[in-house]
Length: 453
Image (tube, one colour):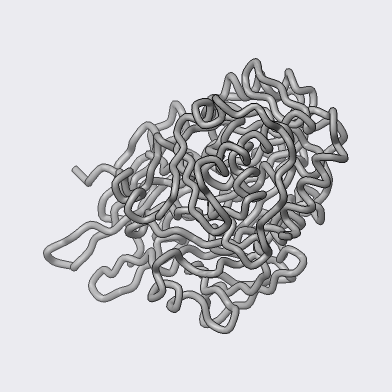
């Protein structure tokens, strides 16, 4: 029996009548959730699914998605969840790639004829592939990361090593359960933290949810925190924030601490290795430029400037992509694709190795340019890309989201880059837009950026 499933079900039994999930008017205790998990198990068994089969879920944020995922774990199925509004690569690509015996888009229909809530024997083993998670596809075609039950147990248990939330804290879910929250949420539920599920993120409804909860926590993207900073002076009830997906801009990090108090933590990980480092809110104020220390059980090393990770939570490989797997996994070490350095036990990221622009044979890394631009007081966020140029091969194009009510001067921005990086890194083109387009994972969508005028 997979330890992940054994430990999860034991925790749910222990919490029994405590609140587990809130989804609009639906409220489920842990005991009621266990019953629904059993119902889904019986439904999936009736459809002929057995250990090792693939199960897809094509639905947005709703409590049934979690119940279906837990049922898949009990049965030892290979589970993949996708947000129907953000299917990377498109649905035809997904259907070709995922090899699912069943794809569920209407969970109510799946269990409509099932009455039994009797427990089902756990069939999963530690070495089985528990889930596939599709990467964002920002650097090419999306690929699915394979995570075993053993790897997910390591990730789930790592949350117990972090500072616990105050008793009675509720996790406000505002990012897709088909992405990172589909792992973070169940891990916190195992600690007795109930989830309040929202379909999407909006500043006003989020602030209202925090006030209503009394004690609220959230795991979301840096861009969402920036929107709160721009639009929400106070957030009653907010006791903890963890961001992930990209490093926080240091000046924004300081702004968040000053406004909301020492409640902001930062996690660094990838779907390929979910839990790598963690910067606790108690340690943040003195280390705003880092993404924290390695999580217990995780090894991090720097090789020629590249960040490498070895961890029990690392992926088995990419689904049906042996060549890509061989490129990033060597002797148990994962080549993350990030550049960085270690200082006083803290990891500092310097950008993605693949994000370079070659101008007149000079290699210009994107991350330092973006970091320099965001130090300008009129800039909220910036994204930098290379565009073709007949004379220099490529030219640097900076797309800038101004602070609301500001209009930064492009030449002033160029001077900032020249002074903080090098003259070779100065953008030839600077475009101002109201808001940067984002991927489903909350990162700037560089494929959707406007071209220079």
